Length: 509
Image (cartoon, rainbow, N blue to C red):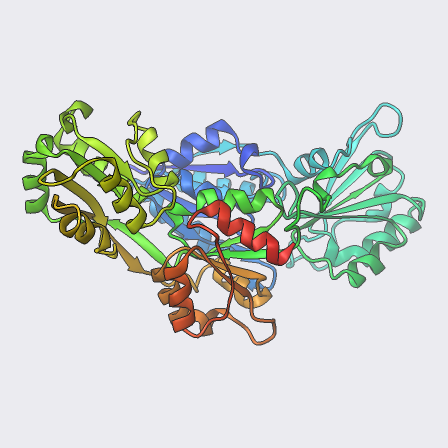
């Protein structure tokens, strides 16, 4: 029987900010079997995909053409012909300087159905984010989209910038900083005033956006002086004089211009990333560990057969909550099958995962430590001969179980539901960015992330940049950093993400 081809969705990811992704794009990301994504796509969007989705990075960063356009089309075509639902996720809008037209034509010619999902193109998103009215009844009645980076196979430039000098309105030039000198010269020669306002916006709409205001005659010197790099957009016209940019205020963005590396597993890094981006940081996610479901089937069967006899169930991580209930609902249809047991959680993040299931937490210690949780449970009641089930991972400390057994005289069972493996994120866009551009700080939230980072540091850190500051979430992680030869710039006052970010602010802002 002939394999029916899947569908390819050419999807615009918008200018970068998470909240500017369309609802249709989010739906397709949640459903797709294969995600083929670009350099300019916000890494957060990958979180919307299901766990088993195959993710293929075909990003083309400046000076690094990792995958050719022909190779990209071969990948998309092959995946679709094998019956997969493929999302080709492109920065901005796929039909605005995104080569979406070429991809559509090639795929359709091969008999593959293609759906186009538009995105907010960079000019619209960046202008709105910076308060620039691209059109205005008093000074701009038209918008022109141009590109400063044409097909390199053309023998001569196809865009005559001089001809656009007298059009009026606002000129939006994509990928133009590399041609700043030519653009400035041609527009002035064509009749546009040398004093015409110009805005350069890099990484527009993102927390670490950079923005400059200048004039047409000063544009080339500013690009050289400030070493302005891609991805940057040029906005030229009287509209730029109305630019407002409160997001640039250091008062509200104390980490603006700082590059911070977070090392947690990708499934866990979302909350930390959000906290840093709100403060203006550029965040590189390098997950040096990965979390995978892992439970002994016989042990699971035994525990679930007697699940209702436990007096307490104790969760030591948010990963444990997710994986335990994934297994639980494969065997039970009703949450009430847990029985009348009480629930303890080691910290706020773990409790938050339980609250998603509308489960209340009976014990939450002041500090997210095994010792504190054990003490809180023993202080609440006499645990002697009570049955306690502790949900763990492969690298969990035995302290909690040992304390409840030896000091609390409880009957303790431990159920491992996941394992933590070391991973190598060096050959990713984020890893290459760290190597090429350096970072201000690296944040560690566990000893396992320290161990993995230590193994790969030579492939990630360049002697061309100062060593980043290393921050730890708590004493055990600090001990691991010191044992690995790293100097610790700061340790969180308590083992929480908020305290870790506060320590970072004290050092860097």
